[in-house]
Picture (cartoon, rainbow, N blue to C red):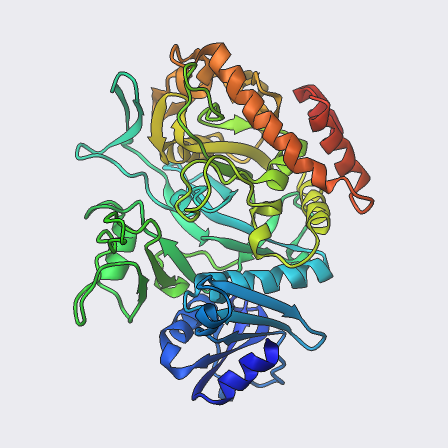
Length: 510
C-alpha cells in the first residue's frame, strides 16, 4: 500500500509544505499533497505552524510526514475516511486517504504528538483552556477536557443569552418551565487553547499544578451551536470581517460572498450538517494567551441524555460535580462520548472515546497512556478536578449553560480547594461530590440542578437506575487496563471501582 501510494504521488504535481507539529516550538514536519488538494495544505498551514524553509537557520529534519492520496478512499477503502500511521525509525508517517483535514491535518498531527509524548514521558491533553478574570481582577485558569462534543470550545465562549440578555439555564421537558439567570457582570475570558494542549515535561514546575501550552497554531472550530446572528460576537466578527482568507467546511457560501457561520450546509437528509467548521489561526483571536500556564481547575465535560423515573438513563450528573484525583483519573480512562454526539453519527447510547478522550487518534498502548495520565494527576496535587454535564440534567434541557454558570462560580471561588461546607457526597460514588449551593452573580441556582435526585420527575429511584447504567459502563471499560504494565496505584483505583468502592475509598487512594 505504501508503495502504491508513493507511485500515485510520483505521477502528480505536488505541494511540499514544511511545518512545526504542535505549533510554534513544536517538531519539524512535512506535508506532501497533490496540487489540486491545495485547500488541504492551506488548512494545515493554518492549523499547524507553517514555516518558510528558506528562513531556517538550522537543519530541517522531519519527525513526521503526512502524505495525502484522496482517491485511495474509494479505490481501496470502500469510501471510508481512512488514515494510516506508520511509525518508521526515521519519521512518523501519516497516510491521509481522504480530503477532510480533521482526521489527518489535525488529529493525525495529534497522533504524532501522542507518539512523541509516549516516548518522552508527557501527554498532549484533549482539552481547551481559558484564563478567567473576574470583575475584581481575580484570575483562575480552567482546562476543560472531554470527548468530541464535550464542550471544549464552549468553555471559551461568552455565555449565550436570550433576547433579554438572560442565560437560559434549563427548560423542564415535562412542564416547559424555563429557568434563567441574569448575568450583569460576567468574567473576562482570555483563551489559551481550543482542543489540544501540550504538557511538555520541561514546562512542569514546583507549583504542584499542571502546566500546559497550546498544541496548535490554529483552531478547527465547530460552529454547530451557532444558529443565528449575534450568538458569538468574537467568532462572528473574526469570520465576517476577516483580516485574511479562511477555510470553511460545511458552511453555505457562494464564490465571492461572505460565509456566515450560522448558515450550515444542508445534508442529504434535509437537516443542517452537524459538523460545520472554520479554521481560525491563533493570531486572529483577541486576547489570546501564548505563554505556558498553570492549571487551577481541570474539568471534564460529558453529554448527558434526559433522564426521568419513567425513562431512567445516565443523565444524573449535577450542574457541577467535584471529584477527588483518583476519580478524575477514572473519568479520563473511560471518557464517555455521551448523548447525541455531533461528531459521531453511527452509534447510539453511551460509548467510550478511550483513554484521555484521545484514543481514536493514538497509536501506542492504552495502558501506557493510562500510566502517563496517572503520573500527570499525581504530580499536579494543587489542581482541582470537577465534572460538568451538558445537554441535560435529569429532566432539564440545559445545552452548555452548566459550563458557563460553573465557570462564573469557579472564577469567583478562586484557585484554592472548594470548601467542604459547599459539598455533599453524591448518591453515585463515581460522581464524587454534589454542590450544596451555587450562586452566580448574586443569584442562587435551584438545588434540583445541583442534586438531580431532588427533581420530582427523576427522584431517587430514577437517579439510582441511571447510576447503575453509568457504574456498569465504567466497570466494563476499566477492566481492559488490568495488565501487568499498569501502575500499581492505578490497579488499586480500578479495583476500587470494580468492587463498588465508596467516595472515601477513592479519596484515600490518591
